[in-house]
Amino acid sequence: MNTQFKEQQCNVAGLALSWIGYAAGLGYFSYRRQWVAALLWMVGMLCLRWALFHFFPRISRFLGYGQIVDKFASIPPPHANPRATPIAVNFYSFFSCPFCPIILGRLQALQKQMGFVLKTFDLTRNPRTLLRKGIRSVPVVEVGNHRLVGNSTTEQLAGLILLGQVPEL
Image 1 (cartoon, rainbow, N blue to C red):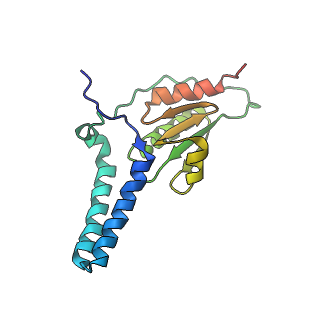
Image 2: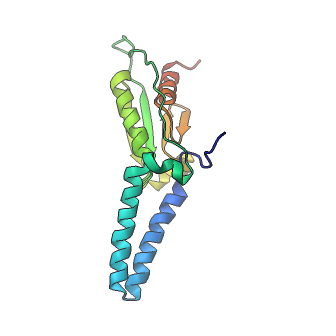
Image 3: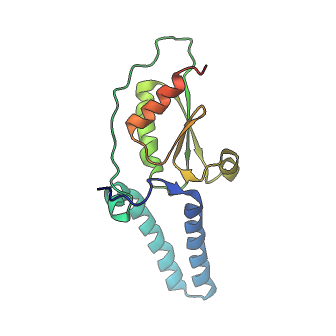
């Protein structure tokens, strides 16, 4: 029985709106000159966001995302050809997405084993890339023309990277 209701990815619009809501709440309490409420809002919301971000892998199943699991792959050693250029892996993230650091950590561990070049892009500061690439949810891992969106296991990430190493005909 599948009890997972939500996809394990973050909608970029939802992340942006949550921060706009945070600023709006802070602005509302400040406008009403309710300084204690504004301070409580500011500190309380940041503490809640930190707790969600920090404990997310442990509480994700209670939030409807299911468990955050990883499947490890047997990874072949990098190519022995010294002239071959390492493959480029692009990682797109957005501030406050709890899945992004999980995937980044998996990619960094794979990078040590597979020897690819990892390029990270924070879409929070570069919304044009969202539009140009058509990204609506994060995290996104891109190798050539192939993409994985959302929480991916180490096995899936390694498969994507190996797929990118195969020359296209």
